[in-house]
Image (cartoon, rainbow, N blue to C red; front, side, top):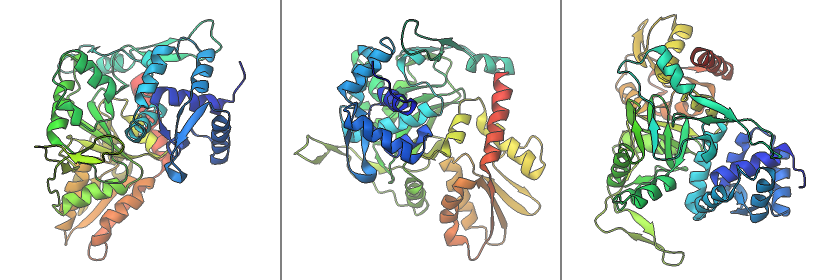
Length: 427
């Protein structure tokens, strides 16, 4: 078997997990732009992968040669069952790129995406006491085992989660399971979820909003949510916050539209349209009403993350229990010398403070409404340095007549938070 470089295997394995992945999302792998593009071109020229789109809209999926090469590298990890799933994920390229980008982001952040690294659905969640102690939480997130594939060229040691916590499941897998079990799939077919992410504190439906405030069919999303709460998908303990959503976007443009529409109360309902074949165009679904995504009409809470490398630190915090409260408490201790403060909005020294680091859309919308009515108050917003352009844009209408201060926390600070979480929960 011919040898490929590390970046080649990283790309091929990511495509094997996720189906189609856009060129811009592949930058999350950490390799330099020049090195990554050169190797993508080599894989494409030698027909290991295939592409669609042009310019910034390019995306890639495995070709037959790439699937065969991975099977020669590790015949058990990249067996026919896995490759069949990859083909299914890449069956509808337009929609598949959104699902693939979401899965790739989560995979790079350390969540389990490959079927060998997580329990199959339906999955049983281990029980927790009504009031879990620290050791209960630690047992939950440390419930993993290391494994490898003896006799294969691939000598890597992998991590398998023994419970669904820390795992991502694609929506096609969930909908297929429901259909095979006799569940009424007519409603959930309209859901725009890419998949679900199971974490200790949140059961998150995952979406990709591109660079717009996507239109959703609320009934379809509710039906999909109800399916997740049934024993058909997950049984046993459920995270306390089980109506949550995680929305990805290409950048902050979608978030600006989502919040802008909400703050201006522009959310008119219109029919939902679906595509009826390549040449038939889009047609309205009779009797349906769609509405634009808002901070709380999809999930509560709804978190937003752009597909940036910088977002990975915040995404990795979601591995851990109570991450949002712990993050706020640490920021209050470091920045304000306040101990045991877990509120994201509070008053101190004659100033109203909003800690919006977690990019919780409901909290951001409430903060913006309050700021609009705070003509005589000092405002201080805490965010991460890479979030500053987004908040500056949102605050621009108030900048000239309000006393607003943005405090930016550095990338180094987020790294220290991640190390603290790692030591706290895994030791």
